[in-house]
Length: 155
Image (cartoon, rainbow, N blue to C red):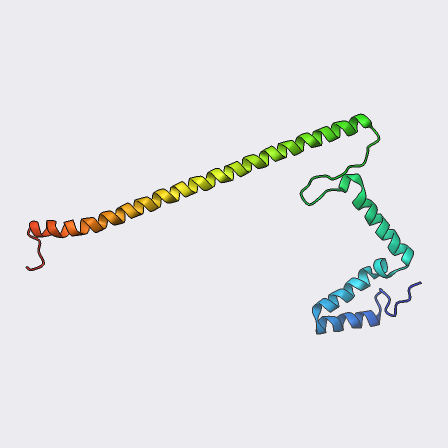
């Protein structure tokens, strides 16, 4: 038996609370709606809640689902077949070595691309500076050439 004042069911009281919740602040109305729909699962008897908890924990701790955030397993349970367990551990070790090798290649490629971009930037900068120096030197020579060719500003 549930001792809650507001039971998780469709009643005039829960509907009114939901409507008032949506009017005052919409997340409150959404929480009341969630309580109405799924409250029996979470607010029901202690035995029922413990059953849901145990079911979830058994799924999370079974060997098939035990993985860290990077997709690597951290402890499979025994399958009962020693030959298969040995084969599985050998294959997982081989895959981890291959993954480490691929990660090293990725790092080397990123370093190569960084060096390539740095060299390209250096080349563009040197070309810009050479053009700029050339324009400065050519500016004075251009005035002398114009005056020698009869192109003067005096008329």
